[in-house]
Length: 181
Image (cartoon, rainbow, N blue to C red):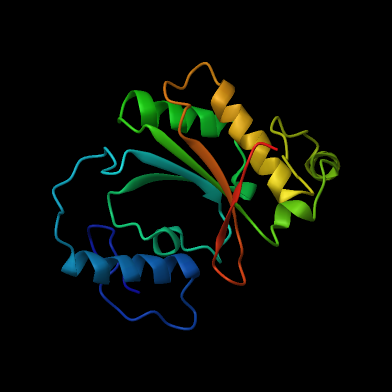
């Protein structure tokens, strides 16, 4: 890729030596060339926020039949409800009008293969203990219940009556709803 006087790379095809980020930036240039502003604001049309795992196998919009602008999507390792998730949900509800929360974990999650010892290992490697919790779990259903409880009991959230949790099966694409049992 060539760099022009304005610091932007010129339109070239990604090469075998291009970094992944270079490929993404080039794909964005092609996207932007055809992009038309949909004229919507940041408020989700369906007034829903979806919290899900960052797993690359889950295409949330396709799996849930969502279109651009339908929802706020909050993703992290495991799809767990952390302080930062509550922060995002609070802004989503109080500033941008969402009223429903959908929580999605999935089968075969990497968070089921590690433990809180991950933090200890990091501390030994880098000399500093992470301030965050790993939030590892062994039972996805139970962790969805815990995440629902965290949302429902947060004093910062206005709307906690429509909070539902699911486990997405990465082999079938189906959601299984988790209840409070």
